Image 1 (cartoon, chains in turn green, brown):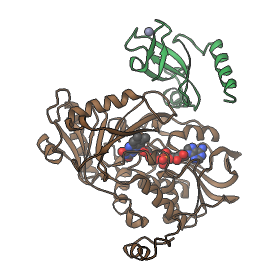
Image 2 (cartoon, rainbow over the protein chains, first blue to last red):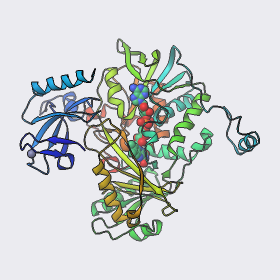
Image 3 (spheres, rainbow over the protein chains, first blue to last red):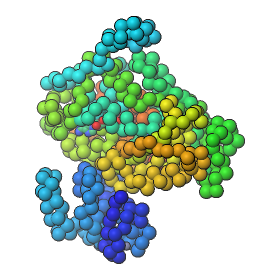
Image 4 (spheres, chains in turn blue, orange):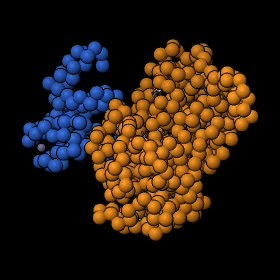
Length: 106
Length: 415
Ligand SMILES: Cc1cc2nc3c(=O)[nH]c(=O)nc-3n(C[C@H](O)[C@H](O)[C@H](O)COP(=O)(O)OP(=O)(O)OC[C@H]3O[C@@H](n4cnc5c(N)ncnc54)[C@H](O)[C@@H]3O)c2cc1C
Ligand SMILES: [Zn+2]
């Protein structure tokens, strides 16, 4: 069972307590955006086989949105961080890189 | 290729079954093919078959990283129906369903198509209205379905409990010519027929890269070396994003796990397929007597072919209310497959930004039923470099144009 730590309340919540929200760090588009930009925002997805940055909501807890880095092949959760973060934190990126080189390759 | 027939069985019975021969050849790849198809699931193999049969293109290879039919084609609950809401969907799914009717004869292999009938239960008033609307749409599309009341549901499914406290049965959408087929035989039958036309089906051959030259495909790199091609069709379901990345474009696809499970075999108790979409549960009885149960998808991206246990719990909890007798059954096996979900829950049959590269994906939780129709439409798209009437509405430019084929009610959770 998937377990993620809510960065707000610090609770290690299992997935039945959480609601998944898809890819994180998408650039939001508004009026005046081109069709391509809207398509990218609404539909085009990285869908990687590997590290995925994604949104979750602590639905049965504090109710807040947060972000997570998770491996879609091993289901390892590398870490979680608040939703008000424009890009994955540097420390998390370093941790992911280290985990991957420990495993030998990507 | 030896033809299968009653006479052949009698002949082989007299000589210890020594004369059957292999169903398909296992050649080493040639240097170049006119068309390479990546993925030997049902859709890839059917595409190859109709390329040969309808368009006379037989210098074709189907490359499969694992074994033939080992993807979702060999993992699904085999429900076949064509009672969709939108016209483009009804056209391609009904084409597929009608091809299933004679597929055994066409392929000379018994795919055990069993048009036993499919009921989609209406368990909320919203569903009653939705399915009545679908029945009207189907009448206009020439797809034979009808909306039936609870009494008729009970007649068709004696083991059903109509008065569940949470999910009473208020009626259902009934398609009498829907049903099931034997999934891996569909893959095997197409493979055997392709091999007989001289096509190469190459298993244990993973595609690892796509080579292009000024926007046009040249070759693929594989675990068995570089193979040149005139055209390339990507038909890899849950792995479509990976292959698209190799070719240099993005797809509106997310891969998630979908699970199924089967019970111990019991005596015949239900001779139709029942789907309960409100509760994400589907059930039919296999020829061996197992109750075959499918559930809902996980909500998060996943390539593990497992899926979360709580989905199984939810599905079984809801089905026990509707079919109280299954509460005493032991479950034998559970498994998962990685399904490819698009933004509007409809498939993609499309040209791509790379010349000579075509995709067929996005069938998600419901693409077993569409294998023959999808292969038919995809073969035309690849052969003519332009979609025919079946494939045209399913181009991937529809996501840019906002021209969706919204089947999220008919296909988002159900098979
Ligand atoms: C549990 C479950 C239940 C389902 N129930 C139903 C149902 O009742 N009715 C229904 O209509 N549909 C159902 N479906 C959906 C259906 O199974 C799929 O839509 C359909 O089988 C997809 O077929 P395909 O040929 O596109 O993909 P697949 O059969 O998955 O074939 C794709 C192939 O591509 C290969 N591949 C991937 N990457 C590479 C690579 N790099 N190089 C070479 N080969 C590669 C894979 O190994 C695989 O064999 C269900 C699915 C699941 C998982
Ligand atoms: Zn919280």
